[in-house]
Length: 210
Ligand SMILES: [Fe+2]
Image: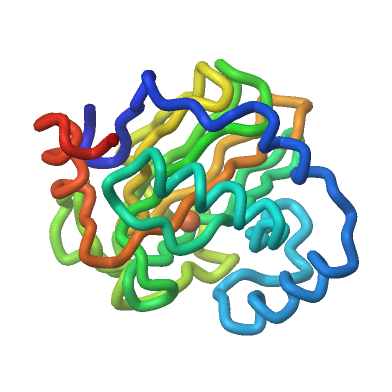
């Protein structure tokens, strides 16, 4: 268990929920565009994309999630990273989309060869703490500064569909440079008041899962 992420091995998203991943729906496209109007992500950024999941899928996943967790699930996103690429360093945090952590699941990708990193941007961080949250105040790292982020932690996904709690208050990115398969995470948004520390505590005390 770390401050960046921890897995919940006993919790897997039902495999059949993957049916929506490759769905090419015009409804979905419209929804995505509406959503992206308010996000930090660049619609033309083809190597890394965050999409609101299909509305039918969101209904199913919310029902499942609310039957599963003792924390309400607000929304479901697909976070895509192209084959042989890494995602962009970013931090959504409370300033940008009102979440401090997410429940993520690898729903497409190559287990053992795909994962995530967390890091700090030295020009923003006032300390060298691996838990530095300065990115939340400053926003997105410009493209030309992406390479200046220092990696503080890394996690590899070894199991498909397994739940892993994910700290989004610290700069993070997807790592998929060694895999020839697209990486897709299902990412569940929970209310801002649930910090990583609080969720870890709930899990350790047996209160996270119904
Ligand atoms: Fe993120």
